[in-house]
Image (cartoon, rainbow, N blue to C red; front, side):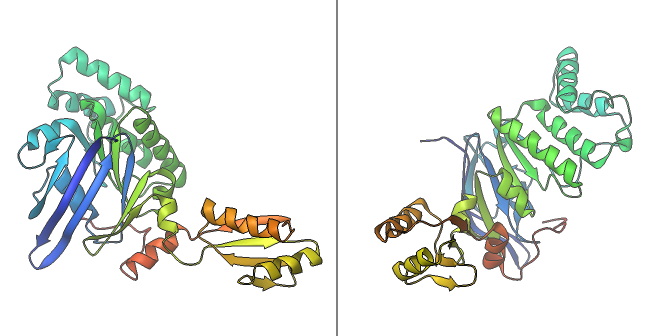
Length: 318
């Protein structure tokens, strides 16, 4: 059994009469990327704040890095790093000074702090800009510096709350590579995002949060299979083969002009094997087979309705 970096059972949080988290359960295996996906105001940032000890839950239990969130909050803080959607970089000082400030906050010896800062600045391609004020950095550079600062304490779990908000596509892809490298080093990443492509590209597992509850959880492929509309398309060049296949697959939708058949399917290996077996039995072979499954956009809107759009800057407070 894979050890769990984060577990939560029945997390609840309200602000006045507004329930933000309404019984949230989570289980995040070590060394994986777990993405919490949801529309504006769904409670993603609130979940991060609770799990990183910044605020207290109203109910429920959680363990982070093996420590009880309430009883061992200081141990939790020692094991984690947090990068919020708004940069913690101080623009009035240089990138190197930001790093050394973090080293001081982690009580590193002066020589060790300088060594760690230099190594991280090099790792995140910030050495040339290290002596420049952080206010002169581009958005992507500030994000890289932000994560480098988070890594000064060598955390094994990192919370990334909307880490690519406001970045251009190139900077976003660079950030994805950084996140993948962190996980390859054994770090667990808890990622909140509204960018569906980001969750699809990065996450080992995705939970969709809506109205304070987990609406669905699984791998990207598992979530896509929850939504109707998946199908297999068979195309033929031989009209006789097309007619034979249509006869053998009575439930298929026909496109006589394109000599194509469309069969409802979740795209699983089991269903594809059964389909091919039926074609073999009929003595027919398709010239082209393509599998079409709903994407995360379909999943998101099916699960959240009109709660919000998935690719806009989101809740500033919650």
